[in-house]
Image (cartoon, rainbow, N blue to C red; front, side):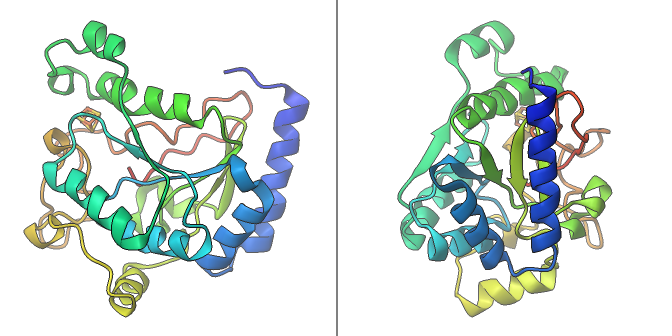
Length: 248
Ligand code: SF4
């Protein structure tokens, strides 16, 4: 993707202004501002994972018809696919979209469905990055569920940032695990069924393991590999800040 330098700097400065304005705001206010500013050009990307219910509930209060993009990689746990359906219905979300890899990309790049054993970056590219890039083409801004308490590069996560010529809102950047648990309890939100089995962070089944006591939240993702993120949050536009992180 190529972006005009003038256009990129305009988007960057818009991100900086909004970040300064919303740095300490409640997630609901951040969402409301995103909806007011971007309207139909805004989407949420959700993994329907261990912590997703909180942000999805907040969205259901602000704009239940907001497009919610779910990466159905072909490698999701069956429990996640069930949870995606029941949670969306429970919250009254009316525009959840399942993003799938293109048949042709799988036929040429992962014909035996075992690319994850050989090259996880290439597998994430076909099954996550490319489908999301295609889907985000119609939007100018998107919302993620990332939080600073997940550690790593997320420690410096901003509430509003720019990547690849689009604005990204991170309404839960400031929230702690205790904040999430309290919100989920207050609103009686159903938990992902694998949380009770020791999965604090949930992605594709080949690359997700339970975490050990005292581990970081994302310790079970790509366990034993250097990889910590799927790549969808790596800015690729010229002049953009590289920010690796993601809730999916
Ligand atoms: Fe492939 Fe694993 Fe990435 Fe899923 S998380 S797309 S299975 S490498």
